[in-house]
Length: 273
Length: 266
Image 1 (cartoon, rainbow over the protein chains, first blue to last red):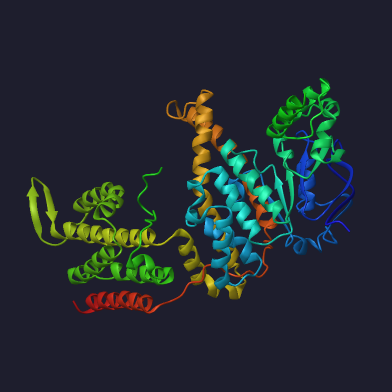
Image 2: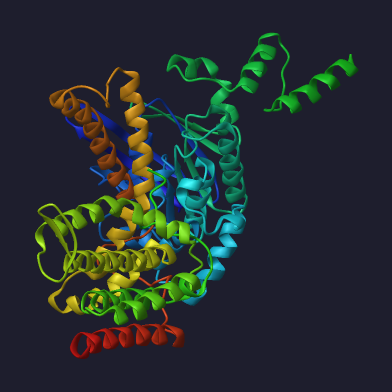
């Protein structure tokens, strides 16, 4: 049994706009999955259904053996955290300390134990010196890191990032992407909904949604191998993959998926001649 | 909007900062009575000394107190004018043609001014040494008896603390929208009344729409982090009454007792 099973799920905001149309897939525990697609392709709708923030109209989603519905949602939320797009609108406490405590209070953690837990997770996101900072004195990237610490402190199995880097500057984006990789290395199942095509390369699996339908689900290098198929739905290809494609057109087959790896291969290619 | 002194928390460490917010809040209520009851200068002298000691122990600069008085100066002058024109009791201090200045007019005004100054000092003392969140907790504690009639004190306290948390965010938003509208030619400063109203509308409508959007997203974020309205939760902040908190309240009660004494016997 997979950790997350999505079966024939559909969702329509109204009769004329179908956001999700008969989507099915399984995700294994510990995988880092990116979901890409255009605005309105249904990415966020899917995430909200998984977190029980939108009622599933058709089909079923099963998380850790429990079907997502009104009866199970409080239990499921103990295994699942979600980081939203806007850093300001998910900062609930008045300071970093209080914001991380908010989830712990909901989880009925005793007050004496909270201090140690807050200290541990704030260190994991590198904000130990900012415990008493108020949100208006933090950058967007720092606020997102606080949100991640608040969710990590609740020890979920799954963390969904709903376009969590889209409102950040390049530095903030980089920090959050590094954290996502770290989480995945620590066997947390990461699902990242993103417009950042470069981020897809650091994930294990990539789901492409188009007009509410599942367009592709495969390893990132395989998804990008068929560049024409993605271009047909106007999706970008990462720069490294474009380079690889050009070489392929010149009958030079490269194995690596990053620029440095390809450069190394090219050196060897020349030395063999 | 950032140079607002009244009601601003000063993040330093002092004896007053460390006191339990409940003790400070009860102390304030007791002192309000102590300030408004007496009619003797002795009582004001005693309370004045206490307030001064509290301000010193809170390490609040005298400049801050003076600044928080500033908005009151116009009101005090107005009060003096009204009193000199209306109060006709006591001794005549000064005569100019048909106008006579009576001693009671001056003394009444002075009483009111001293009371106001003491009040402002005390409230500034409370807000400058107590984090808004701690103040919310103290108010929640004071409202606890209302739970008998099913008043949701905890939810109200949470609401207030979230509202406080979002004030700076909304101010930022307001400035951003004002700038955006200015760049589109909206004039917030000039024009007649109807022009002003329509320019304010161009600020208020987007502000509300954004605030609602924020509220929905915040509700989602709270739910996603396991918040269930009305469900049991543990508390991170737990207020603890210490010996100095009792002493503080007792001193305030003694001040009240003294001012009642002066009201009756002096």
